[in-house]
Amino acid sequence: MAKIYEKFAELRGKDTDPRSRRYLVPTRIVWTSAEEGADVRGVENLLVPSVEQVTFSESGCCVLKNTPGKPKASVLVDYGRELHGSVRVIVRSVAAAGNRANIRIRLGESAMEAMTDLGVKNTTNDHANRDMVMNVGFLSGMETNESGFRFMRIDLLDDEASVSVKSVNATFIFRDIDYIGSFECSDPLLNKIWDTAAYTAHMNMQEYLWDGIKRDRLIWIGDMHTEVMTILTAFGFNEVVPNSIDTIRDETPITDTQVSWMNGMPAYSLWWLLIQYQWYMGTGNLAYLGEQKDYMEKLLKVLCGLVDENGVEQIPSKFLDWPNHDNPTAEHAGMQGLLCLTLQRGAYLMDVLGNGAMADACRAAAERMKQHIPDDGGSKAAAALLVLSGLRDAKEANENRIAVDGAHGFSTFQGYYLLKAKTMAGDTVGALNALREFWGGMISMGATTFWEDFNLEWMDNAAPITDLVPEGKIDIHGDWGAYCYIKFRHSLCHGWASGPCPYMTNFVLGIMPVEPGCRKVRVKPDLGDLTYAKGTYPTPYGVISVSHEKMPDGSIKTEISAPAEVEIVR
Image 1 (cartoon, rainbow, N blue to C red):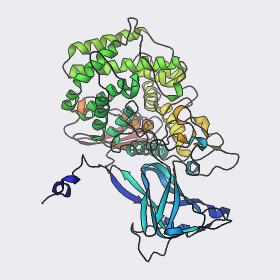
Image 2 (image 1 turned 30 degrees about the horizontal axis):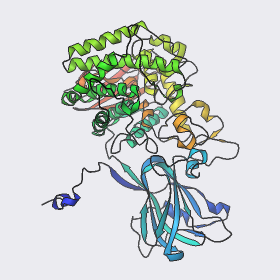
Image 3 (image 1 turned 90 degrees about the horizontal axis):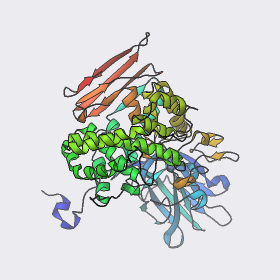
Image 4 (image 1 turned 120 degrees about the horizontal axis):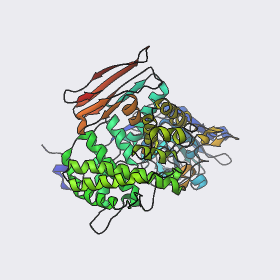
């Protein structure tokens, strides 16, 4: 017996696609041009599940017909949830010259994006076409390219033509993996936030780990730290992580005489080291860590040299996050914290790998950085990184910066670190309220995945992304954004925004690995204002299950089930 690619050498290829495909029927018709007098009939048939095969006897079709003097036939559908994939258009018949017709497909993460022409409000085809023309014939099936979207508009373009469309189903393309981790508590909104955060990271687990499925379909290594924590929390080990961080390492060589920065940004090479620490703690794979030793040693030598004699970071071309990109004071403070934390983690990894001299150099540089505690420049994200590195007191930073004005000034990219800093300050109730306000705000605006950026002010007088924006309302997708994500170029599924998932598991459920590979796991819940919380956490040895209930006297009753190989500490 032989596989087909073993039997025929031409079919062997390089590797296989690890992803699966499912066909999804639209959940609702949002709009049709029949409202404007166009000829659109049987649109409800697009909501009916059917086999993915056109036949001669099709009866339930949607008919799009263009005649002189009438508007063009168009339909906007909603698939109910942001997804990664394509759209498969199955056509029963065409009445037009040559039995061919041109249709236009527009994909959108919001309803308004799918209704907007290229170039208007910064709509683009960057990274993946989301606006395209297809020439279709009778008894045919055509599929678009892959992208990230929730909405799809189809237009019949030819002046005198008719097309009978059997279906416009989405082809959902994803890694078919189990949600091993879970979270449930007494607040349904927090449960929805955890699920949405995990799903956001899952959508970006394609052939490689991306930051965005519509735009930023790239391995942005700095953005991945939060995603890796989310993957370890919700799914456990997945090869997409080492495949991605190895690819960036190999594309960014470093020698004794020349340093290259990952994705062209020094901060992102720091995040790569932090990912290596996180991955080792989650998986315990010492052999894999050993493969990184040479690169780590060279990189850490460079990083130690970026701390001057006064303990001040000297990182060139700083990038903290988008909201602080025009705030050099905040970027310096954030880089001071990030570099100090990286050197601390680097020292640990060098000890594990047997390079005591480099470990000592990292510790000395990190210790020297305590001489310089910079002003945070009004930035909550910068203040949080100073707290996480131990350079600033958590309670002081929370009281004077992070907790001021609630979740205003939060950052999607820095979300996990902001929430962690608040809990370190003893303000878990404040962290939960920030989750409800900030990430819950996105959900209230129709989000089913979390966005590249978000400000609470954007919600003022704004219509949700599920609606066509009425006159007098603001389009929260098409009227906001900045930098590289102005208006409709803004990504509404960005993996760096998934921080609530690991945060709630690590600090509300209190599940935190304290030895590599989860050999020892701390369980120390902090329910804040919740009455109960329970969930699961994947380890290399099996699943940890915990259940916490707040008793009338305020104490917490905890039940834990863990694999025999895992030592639980309280």
